[in-house]
Length: 629
Image (tube, rainbow, N blue to C red; front, side, top):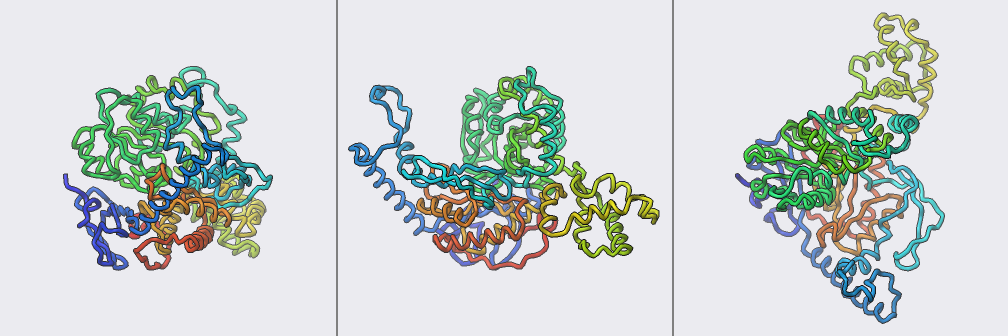
């Protein structure tokens, strides 16, 4: 098996003439397409025939000076931590940390020494960057209750003030379904009135509803597999099902960046586990039963699935694919990393994913062959012992999935759209409605919903226009009343997310992702991951900048997630942005201005690669297929 150029220094060239692999250069820069852009030369990888589209991932090396200063910062924090522990021991400083009781000193320790030391002396200093109590839906914007601490973040007190309208750049709300309005929300409310909130039983007893079986058929159709199962908790979908699939005598080769649920499930199975470096082809050649993850939530990297499938066929192995982040967010129609690479779903033995990200709900699914799913129904702990998925949560999943699939009535075919354009011409030609802009009328025509033009109205228009007999097809007053609801651009945006063309969300997410990543590079930040990944990690490195960045962004009404050790390597602390289809270009531009301002304030623009600003061009399907960032 040959080694990809992504893992060989001689296969990665940079424009500034410095040898690859040095500090400040790109590591693991995988690309499977040949092009030349902005004086940066990249060549075919040796296994490029497996890929039908560009696959670009870059992880710029930590600059040497930054790495030294980061280690120095942690060293200083550690020294002062031990000094403070000494002062606490002598009651010079108040001690808030958990300790072993004196009478239990001979017991097995409840607290690991270093982890407890790190928590009380480092994490606690920046604890206010997390755990903020939200008091709204985590949509494009959110509200939270302000809190202060008088004892250096050991305890918090509410001030009674609610901070409103904070831009959300931290939630996995990829397609914008995490809202408290719109058709999905209305459907979930109706199901709640009929079925209630909880089921109070397991699927094997009294908790198997008709809605469960309908949702499973819908998920199987969406994935392109024979059968599927749904579960009430995404974490348990992995941790409780892997032990039913593997056991003693099995070998599981697990990606080093796999989620904790995969790690726990593999350990509970009793199988032999070998961990391989993420996207390392050499390690993949050794696998038997493999558990890759689609998009890593901390790195923004996408699994090199075509190579895994090729190796699976060669070695007659099984592939368990976790699509928690890619399902709904990747691929032309949102069917995840399998569609993104143009692969056959049947080549993946076990397809797992969650409903907590793109679908704005909770729970998870597993899809595959029918005989395999039937085996899980009787052996999975998540089915036998766990309470069934809540009815309103199921309806949220079902309604949002129908939107993605174009089966919710908000997506009309081109012929119907032409009919609505004719309607616009008739209205403006005969009635001269000057108060309603034509673009608003056309938008209404393309997005009928209960809140806008009624579908029944649309059905009546086609035969009327076809016979050129407009007034016999529908009441003109009804059309005008609906059109006059749209009197401003702001109101149009609100209606769009309440019931607009849901399939356009996938396109908008792809557009926002490419745009945001490109602008971040142009501003000089080091960002990790794949060009098409909506998870965008921006490197902070130094421990003092973790809390500083989160606080400065919050002062400017933008909520972000900051991450440090032990969730990341000790010198790779970062801020993690999650892009959403709910963000408009204007909103992203405003956020980028603030990020650049804070980046200058905290000196976060570490990149040695100068990316020239590029002109914006219209985003269409060719952009998605031929992105050459």
